[in-house]
Image (cartoon, rainbow, N blue to C red):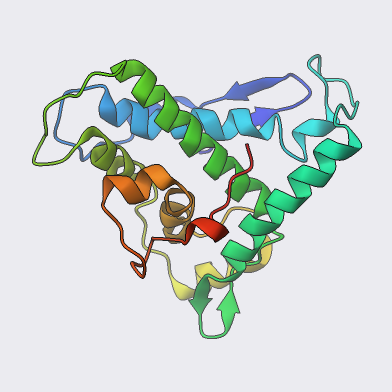
Length: 206
């Protein structure tokens, strides 16, 4: 079960099973919806503008619509994401393959940024009360991390790292948020904290 972007049809598709995923956020607000659905929607939308989506125009024709400067800038920024994932240790001396998971990792980053902007557009400057002592931003990032809750066998991890363009779920939970200043502000991260990537090496594509 997986959502996908179809460049030839210029459409994104979400299987019905996505709406039936259980939510562990104990609040009847729109926040879990924004934090769980919006990053997935944004992820698939981002594929329409990445190194694969560039090959198809708005009507699904095979036509590269990037300029040479677009390509140069994208590749320079994408290298940051590639290096980030290559730094993630899977087990032993095995690390994530930055090139293999690059497209999906970029889409995660773009999707989470879009979702965060959607949340604050929905709030329209309002400051909702704390829920269980948590701000909307804290709940947003926690709900996003819960999307990737999983427990993988070592054999499956090795298979994924060698064959699958999707990173392991435990890295997807932390990679995109650690590149967002909004995340570090939400949790008051300080230099040296595990997910507080220094501003100089935070990745941003768009």
